[in-house]
Length: 59
Image 1 (spheres, one colour):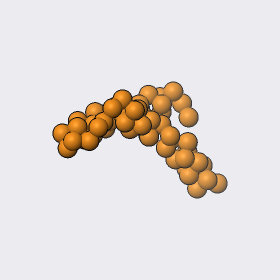
Image 2 (cartoon, rainbow, N blue to C red):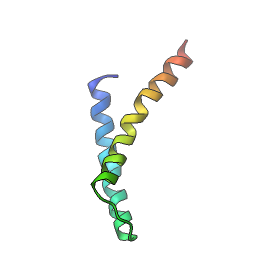
Image 3 (cartoon, helix red, strand yellow):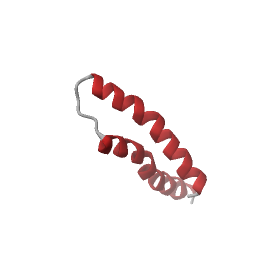
Image 4 (tube, rainbow, N blue to C red):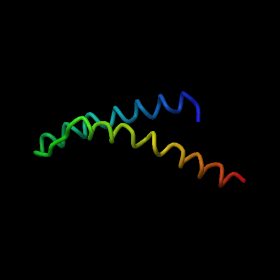
């Protein structure tokens, strides 16, 4: 995993987290900072698993 992968996943996380939190607030849900943090970190947590799948299939 390179630093480029981490930067891309953080950007993707922020791009998806802001609209989802805005929609949640409009629907009446409480979307605080921790919801934003979870939504941003979800792609970062998926990267090692995706690498594992890719290298497992490659061998």
